[in-house]
Image (cartoon, rainbow, N blue to C red):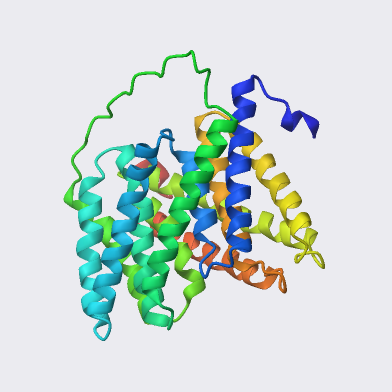
Length: 341
């Protein structure tokens, strides 16, 4: 067990501690500040600390600006056409298609996730709740400011590299034009999912759109299948880890010290596995970390450990990913060698 916390070098250790500090502090602030939507203080720091490579103020601003603009635009569309959900859905398709056309390399594909998902959150919640969505935008902005400040603090406490070492030169990724078929696939998957969520009052299933968006960005069938299989492991497995977290705090969920201690331990464990893995393993553990933190922040309160809703989330994700996997299998044509004789 102790081998999990032994690192190859000081910078590997720093990264694990940096991730742990930023995510734990942000999630605790989400609870203490009693925000209406504390989930953003789990979503944003986890994505920033596991995906971002530029922790400067300018880099953080470039990361957050598209998400904030997408949420504000979604609110404007949703409020303007509140009585006409079909128009909202149609305009959303134009937005999804615009985002997909711009995602011409892996970095841009990754940058598409947060703006697209925040657009979906705003329009779905505006359709099915009486919440003040303008206040939701305000809380998104507050969460971004808090996340940026805490992440800068974490990077200051645990530097990313030796200050004397020169930053490696950035390699420009080649852009590959998005084909009409790829755009149609993204629109079909994301549009169908959003249409279902707008028709059926199932807010807990909104977060199932995260793996749907990730799968829809794949250019090849094999890549699509791999994303679905990996997301099944990380998303459903993350709910299982969150359930274990909840069980450990049964009867003590209102004790802030116990919550902070157990949360920091879980984050450090997953972060340690992440920083010591290769590229594919790193992505797997980063996805698992996000999938674990979201249900903890969404469902656990001082009165309720949220175990039932965590299991419901895991079931909804399993069904969603199961449907995607079936779609892959039934649309895959068999080669002559695979045909039954």
